Image (tube, rainbow, N blue to C red):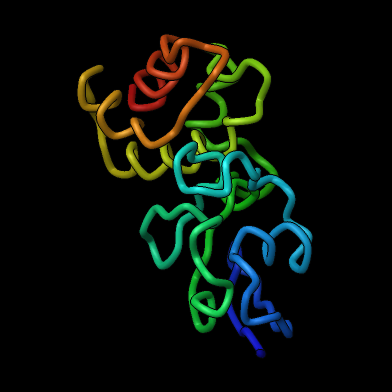
Length: 150
């Protein structure tokens, strides 16, 4: 099947197998390897992307659902080769350890802080509950998000 979509503001047109997931399409067809495969069951959040402005686990979305869609991956969070404020905050506050969950965390956190000037820890923890991290204990991730909204 033919998919036409916009990924990180760039037009893409590719033939895909109808059984392919959005995750596999992004990594192997579009060559955007920032989105990670963790569990392939929608449980860990490592593959989180924005699909038409909504957070989704790309491992659960059939690639054919990307047709005519606007997708943002972790590669699209930065602007003009500059780190976004959420990416910069993750660097400053140590929000990533091994880095495996970081792409999904960054995409989710970018959606959370969008247009916000204030957030509290409880709101952040609840919103980010779909993204699992095995290294940080979430303290630095929360601090990173709080820093980004300052």
